[in-house]
Image 1 (cartoon, rainbow, N blue to C red):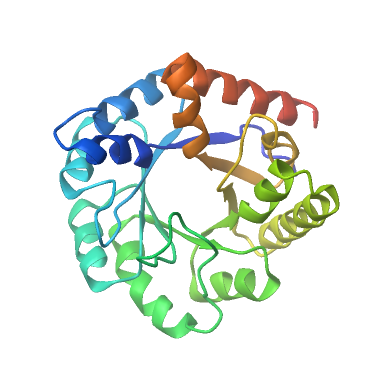
Image 2 (cartoon, rainbow, N blue to C red):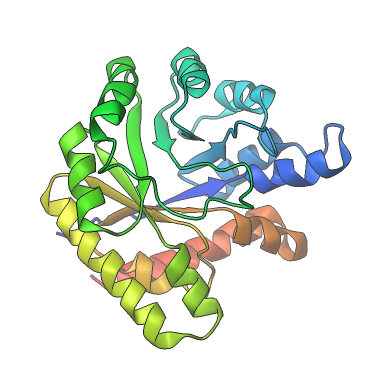
Length: 251
């Protein structure tokens, strides 16, 4: 079954990165989120890291107050973040791995080896009405573990696919696309909603957007980079066009 409308979640973390490089209030991530909302984004993603290197607590407060579209709150599975998420009760909570030394999220969360602990960790979110997703590699064991612990959504890490595309390693690109394709279909069979994210561009988004079992793409860094040259709204509209063209090819 093909999911008719492919949602676009826009990650606004790196608007905060630019702000924090100098201090002060500009550029404002909440303003960016409102522009994205107006431009047709289906949701906003924001990652509150332990070290607050980009998004900070007041950004989450502002996003919760201002947005009419869903907020996808990315976070590590720590007691501090659990308390913050339970206070805000965002539409969606996405658990991601987090290392202080990494520049960006480098891989998927290890669910299969800590499924009992994660099942207990996510239970309060589910009880509070937030949709829980797990940011994982395209691996069968991880998909099965997410289904086992009761997480209704997975987000497949597309970083290796995107890197291979950018570097012209076409055999690796095709192999990574095959993994994402297979695991999206398998997760769908298990009753999970499938999202994909990390590193996607206008050039590389098409094959992922064309996958019939994918419900949402989460894209941030590339869109924010393009916004420097064409404006945030037009950059989002252009990404939407590429996504829709790929999805319409399935009709």
